[in-house]
Length: 384
Image (tube, rainbow, N blue to C red):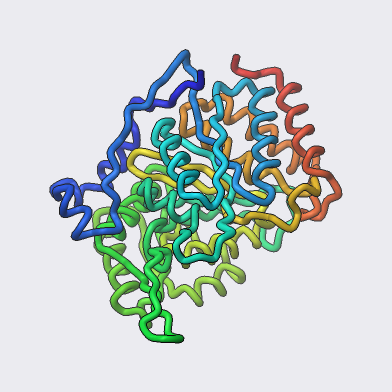
């Protein structure tokens, strides 16, 4: 029987971030701020020290990458049991996945391809984030020594608002041939993602937070996000705060990326900037992303690419998904297992330079995974 995960202090930071909503009734939360979900925590079971984690393979290369995660966990002795849930275009699939995540508290996922073009079928990825109120995405973009890249020694943290902006999925055809798409920015969500960013910087010894925006054009929506960041910044005088327009930001990232430390931005800008930085470091196959809410967490590859074109060819880079699994283990409190796998990954790609074609190498996906497993076994410090 798969066990369940429980944390002694489940995301207490989330409670701090949610302070502005703490005095609001459930009715007010749902109707005055409709993009903040009223999510109640389900008690999570724990049996024998093992944790159950929902696994959503998704489409494209997702299923094969999840197989590598299970294989590496087996040899590392990670005390995790996976509940695999396949999601198609049926709403019942999505509902079951959400129930599983609520039951387990934690999930690891590939990018889920929404094949239907019908307006009634929403993006599964967006729906999961919205329904579980995973209001923030964290992408730690750090260079791997020994990996060919356009820029070296990068260490940037991208913190992205995860549930609103252009991803609010509020579109309609006002008259024939005219489509209107709403960009929604709220004070409440801007407040808690900004506070998350400054708390992250404070706890991780970061010195600067940069707010990315387009407030010179979108004066109300991005203006609200920027002003909220400036207000929150006053509570953290020890951390430098500045702001930058999104188009200039992209240019600065390509030319002088080392000026950035922690970056905070709305949803769409986060998608763009994440891909830019991943491209500078070595591509989509290296970095993992973390999605957090008050009660749940989901871990996934950082750029959220499906990789359909290379599926089944044994050339997909497994590092991003394995890195997501390492972040998941740390979240669950299995630090020794996480560090064991992380060291094996770094030895494989940094020292031994076993690289898949996206990094300029000739190794197959299975070659990389096997060498990681070999390094785990050779370390002889497995924590069981």
